[in-house]
Image (cartoon, rainbow, N blue to C red):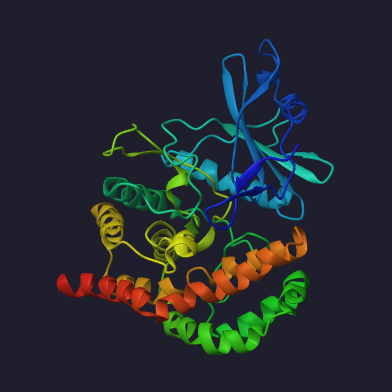
Length: 383
């Protein structure tokens, strides 16, 4: 069975992964005695349209849970356990993150063949953006403001989580290059360590492209990044990773979902990721012929964040410098995923040309430069 899922643009495509079957769900939930003791048989009530994993909401009697499956080439058991430890830490600090559930034997990961499974409490709140592709902007300014407040609270809750950074991996974000004092050497080391990435990049003139387009921006950001406090962050802050209090325009964030890109980076880097993924409409480029940003959402997101955690002048400068290269390292991981894991030449090229180079180039053009100028002016206006 193959479901249609969100593609890399505003389209529906065949999934990279087979849909989770009812039989799989029942086999997985058999590891959770308190669920398997519920009367009746578990059944699927919703399937996620996200493209890079398979996930469902399943129900058994009165219990609903979220079941997510990953191929071991994408997520290892060790990596999932680290994510789950982060989720438990956040919950212990009061952050509204769905609980990770443990099996009868106390494990948070179920392994079967080439797959690993995780089970969470079903999210609470209204999933307003359930059918919206990732990286689409907010639909309401108030949503952006509430998301900013929620992000600041999450950063406070995460600040003392001491787990070391997870190294660069497939579909894992990091600051291995941007956060290094010698980013060119860090890139060389990364490619040498990740053979799959090295093979993926062989079809591109990546060294010339990095030298021309990416390294100048990274070198502007790197000294400012060195001064930032390292901490664990969400890594993928966008509307469809949040649930909401109501269906109304003034809805507030209810719960925070999907820590799959969480890692030890910096709070300012996470804000840059949030702006890049919620205030710039990358997916409309086919229809409009250009990529647009909406400073109303930028201001609302930052205003909400600063209601909780005001930014210093240096932090704002780091944000402006980081924004053009905030997507670089995850884009590299996407290139490896599409080339080495799912073997899609089309999406490999899209990840490289569109995501890796395209995002950086956009900030060099008039629309991206205008957004950076707006962020700089925010700081100037407060002096």
